[in-house]
Image (tube, rainbow, N blue to C red; front, side, top):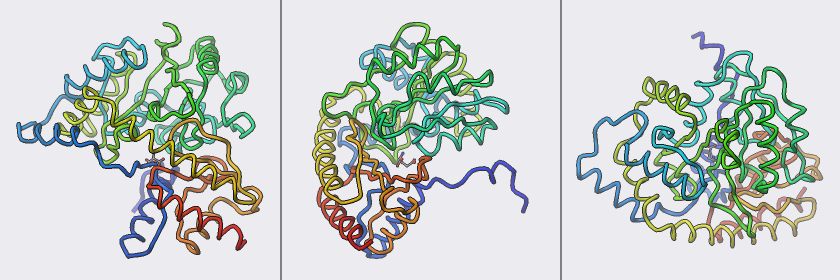
Length: 387
Ligand code: GLU
């Protein structure tokens, strides 16, 4: 069979592949400690599940508008105003099948051959692949642990060419957990406005912050940047709703309309009764989010301490998300070799940094229980001393 050329230009998602492998090994009775997927181990809060069950019972089982249930679009617009000081009407908002789908819709609606998209590395692995699938070109800008894995305004400016269309910002970041300060965001916004670019701000980890770190949406730094911003967010990480597949996007009406057209020919609406769960998530108490964040904070502390006790491993202190991004360069191994050997010999799953554009690092997710963290870190320590 001759497949379309575009398929040969991308590779399967390593985060999904490795997480699935770890789950399959567990299914076979193998005692695996998985630090692979960025998937909270908590169940979805009961009131959210109840709202979806109620919607099912009320017959919310039919097709709905492609852009989402009007009530959910309204609730999202309200959330963006209250939490992020962004003044969007419901027409500026669309509901998607998860944050990944939001970004995919965006790339299809915006990017075509000849267009360049600037992506700081380490990056979440699907960004460049989506650009490729849309026919565009990713311009990867490497960052270092010395700058806390943040792109500087100078680096951004240097990467801009007449073909640049879009800049991808992700703070708090997957995979590094780094959080840009409001001042740093303001400086990036200035470059974007000066060069009349667009920015997509992936804010999926906005609620998961530590040590007083602050999340400020780039779109909130004045009207010029607001007009050039697209916000991507979703329910998976904050409300432990990964399998529900509900994300959203907010931005200029023209763009939301274009993405809705694409969605109307691809997936249609997001599962109708699931959207009622999302409404409950936004409209009820946020105590469940705070509770999960408190647990992540404790786990982060333990994982950081344990990583830093191990000879030849180091990592910067992440201020957000639920990942530690560990430098393995002193082992002399490639990240794939490191992660393969660790899984094989000590049954610990993690994601090799090569997936995120950096081969001397690995990503560990601590969105898992404390016992697994303790046991997995013991095993990593043993693995390291066996090298
Ligand atoms: N975003 C999560 C991660 O990075 C889930 C897997 C994926 O979609 O990449 O682990």
